[in-house]
Image (tube, rainbow, N blue to C red):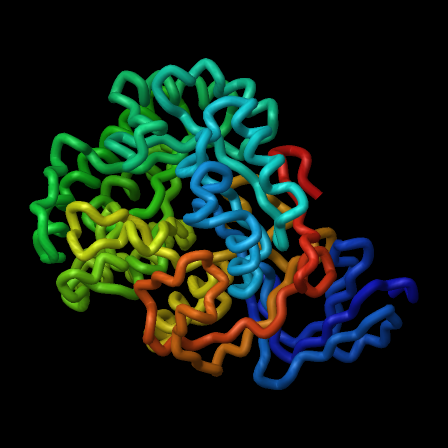
Length: 441
């Protein structure tokens, strides 16, 4: 190994190549130059030796984050979001095209968002484009400008500037995305089966207004349309486990469709949500414990591809106690890893699996082959996790801009002690890069 290495990290426990083993990781010019035995002699400008209770993992890749800057920066901005990401071991985020103003539905809007992010980000940031009525003609230009794919809704998104697609609009969008060999992300709830929640503090009432059947029907439409158009499709934030047999059958028949779920669906349950506790409100909703267990079974079987946070913050004043009126979204960017690991561990699920779900698989699906893995040639994005250490979620210690969390007061396991981006330990200096499809470092 060359003597001009920038960094060597020695770990008696590391998640590498789908197993946990001792390694020494050599870093040069921001990339992993070698993965060798723990005791391999190497000279570097800096050597970091992990403690016996620490595990080296690749930096997580969260492909579902709402940053909201510009336009709603008071909800979350690039500085606060990427600071929270780094604290949670996340080294790459892909920003959703809403709820910023303007939404990312034109190249001009993309440039506006990139300029807002420039010089602020502590981790690497990429961008999704939006597929909305009136702007399907902008998809090709956005694709050429480097977005990683496109996001659409099949019902009201919650913000007027990002309207949903009809069934005909979905067909047109999928046809266009297929021609571009891009990826279409779909918020799959059928608005015809969703009713307005009755005003009040009842969580049961809110849950009943967004039945599992709305996801089943919408996912059926996505499958049928993807099958006809040949579009690569992705179902975001699956909450209804009953849709999984349809997805499994579609994939078996050759439809290129993937699916994600989120920490809150795997760790929180409807039976535990107090009335008026709108910090738990999200769409689709957190469902019952029996449904949650089916989601875990699907994670283990591979029927769900990966886990991302759908970090969707708002100001605290929008989380009123009325479930009909409150903003729907859960903030968990900083604690997603701990939440999932806390629930996975007693189920006998290994850290290797969690890393695959939260780093390797999302990176692979969105076209980031140098992210989410510890191997020669990959970006030297790393996190140091103490998997046995626990903490109580104190919202005042989260870097999210607004101190609202469905996890407040919960004891979680797994503390991220250090995060490295391109071989440099993340500190207060914004060294993150703005990523573009096909032109990433």
